[in-house]
Image 1: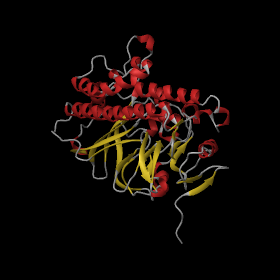
Image 2: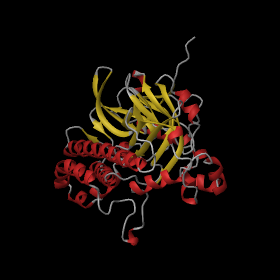
Image 3: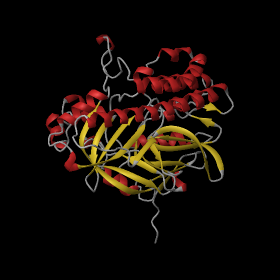
Image 4: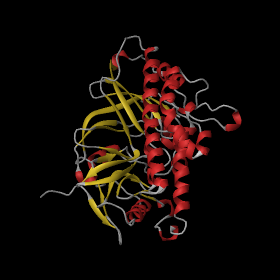
Length: 408
């Protein structure tokens, strides 16, 4: 007998919810949020839920929301185009320095990361003087940005140029990893930084303002949406597409700087991007599914069309995976974007201490201080259980383990 790889949850007066979560815990609050989203009238066929699902702002992280004739800005979120990039090098583990602190330090010096208080006068997470490559990339992005800012002038004052090629904070990271054959990979996680955050928040507010008369009828105010054909719908699609392009270029620039930094520390000459993947996991785009042209919002989910490569990172100190999509139509050709949080950042800081953090990351050259306790591996779901739950969505191509991790 064939076992169904997903479970189905039915929303009252709403679309079905198909959940690839067997063997993985799902919090009640996330289930309730899924039921709210499924009640929207424009959901196409069903919601697809990935095994890393957990409570999010607007809608659950780890969900795939197909829609016809409408888009929900809060479902895409404020880190528009957030995603992963990984590149295999021609190095092996034996080529790395015996002490990895110098490599970590070189990467930290090459990629602005973290954030300083505005009162300090400078943001350590932004460039003071951008490199020429960043300036050139910004020049390519500028015409599209100017067109958006002409309609929404407050966006002109956002942190945009100086954030291009920078990491950010929270769960964003740069890692040096080894695969199953001890080959060296560089991997990083970031998105559209300050400008994407501003675009996301602006259009979430506009959607709520546009629906002021009807917002009481929504399952939740964060599910305010734009109907296709409205001016704000068209402007949002334009702005979100630009922010996704910014995010992709942001990762490409960082990867270039990480490789250059490593070349200053590692004695052996090497090539990078022997095998490279650059994929979003917070975004919306038009796709064809079940014969219909639909908008697919992946909030904490990765495209996994047949043969398409993707990246599923584990938590800080756990393994990660390069995967190949199986093109599962019921999941709208998607997979999880990571392990998924098992608890909030506040709960992680309450439950664990510095000694727990040091033990959990003993094998990784990384920060081991109070400011990263919320990223402790135990705050995330078991990545092996997450991968087992989505075996019908992707196949594993490479298994990576971290040896260096840079956090914002």
